[in-house]
Length: 319
Ligand SMILES: *[C@@H]1O[C@H](CO)[C@@H](O)[C@H](O)[C@H]1NC(C)=O
Ligand SMILES: [Cu+2]
Image 1 (cartoon, rainbow, N blue to C red):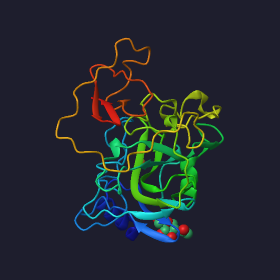
Image 2 (image 1 turned 180 degrees about the horizontal axis):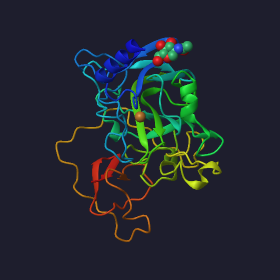
Image 3 (image 1 turned 60 degrees about the vertical axis):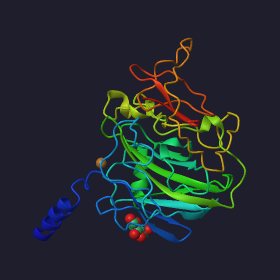
């Protein structure tokens, strides 16, 4: 017992938050194992398909600027990309044993412009959801959730890359959201993959979202109270984010440009104010939320005091 206690103490010192939180530490696809980024090691020399992240702590702001690929989510100096066949399964492993059994599992893809995702800012991409699991059975308060299933699966989650997804370079974003306390806790990590042998079904415009922008603090799926009186009888849970890839009803969205976006020497055009005649949706988008961009069809009005600012042709954000 004493030795166990000592080990426990040592582990606690090495990674102070490991017991309560964490993230995706490795991946497996087609029998190949890929070590993830080690957030508590020196960045120097780390070679991995995963985008770097810095802490086991969760993101707790639905519109946080780092919610796409965690903090900071930029490419590593020795960034790798895994080649993944369309139609194959990819598994993400969280740290063992994942502690949060109440909340959904979600997996997204975002296609990168150009010939690699390396160097591409995840916040400029359009994401679509290829997998989700919310409340699987029982009630909000004591039911079986996607994240409970993840724990039962050796703290891992397996998503099949749809065979209809066009070939190309993508970020894959595995996420678990923990709802045991509010605000909800987001645990997203991204990896770079090149999908080969894909199909020709581009996501539709209503399936595509930005991070930040896809979630809002007031989303029904992010505000559930597990301890409320009705939580033991409520069996409906609305998973956050867009409709699943393949279930949207919008028109096919234009594919990202196949060449890198031109580097402009001029500053992005300044504040693009939403038209003052815009309807009810105007004035509700939170800071960092998307308010415009090519293919974007959502509301355009930012909540005061923020204004809609164009970052590039594909993304305008409330800042
Ligand atoms: C469980 O996951 C760990 C990685 O976290 C892996 O090394 C181990 O092989 C897995 N065990 C099984 C039975 O899949
Ligand atoms: Cu935690």
